[in-house]
Image 1 (cartoon, rainbow, N blue to C red):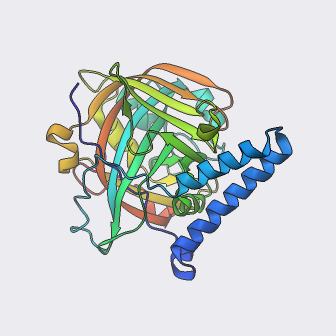
Image 2: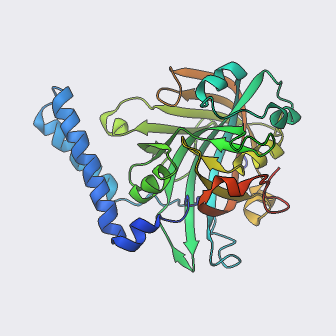
Length: 344
């Protein structure tokens, strides 16, 4: 199987409150401690496990928090020197699109946000259907002013693109209600929550790439909510793909477009303007995006009930990015990327 160069990247700059008013390590430690304490209380109240088992799990969690999730096979940030004053990085992602009935998607997107059907039908999707974007990724080498802002971290997104947030009939935005984020990355968790997105702390398998290549050749990525991985519980979400000879039926331009739509949460006030560059060396030559076909397994709360989707098409890709955090969504009216290769 042809191997590609795995890359990661960090989700963006740290909220000013965390950076300006408190030492980062103190901020991170306090959030981790809070999560640990919450879990212990819930365990005591709702479980009959013995004290030894409880402390064993706590010790395992503390061990995890001391371990960096550094991607060992990821390319370096190729645009940091070009945009030194911006938050830049690398994202190694396994992207896919679940095609569902429009009525189902409508039930998951707040009613005040219209859906721009004519924006996605140009990619060959029927108007009574809708594409939910699945993004399993690891962020790497996040830089600004020559400094690495945060350690690598993984995340899993169930996103709803082509949303008419501004009500102008043409500006495309991407809605997220929930995001699974590494529980080892409290800064990323706090930064994401600022968008009014519900963050679900999680661990991932693998924790240092966007997929594991199984011995039989398929590519897998698993998401474990909270301490499920420590407890031996099943994943809350997972993907399992094999490579295909081409990127179809959804074209690569679909994934360029959807990954570059500004992202917003429940109140629609602040947007994450993540610009993924599909035209750097990370996405060309031996690193060209790879077509995928397989299954996606989702469970509550990101969907109403557990469901397994088969025949799902996607791509494995590595891209550089610039991230503009906490933008007023209204300023992104008509946004379509910054240039060739940045959006479809």
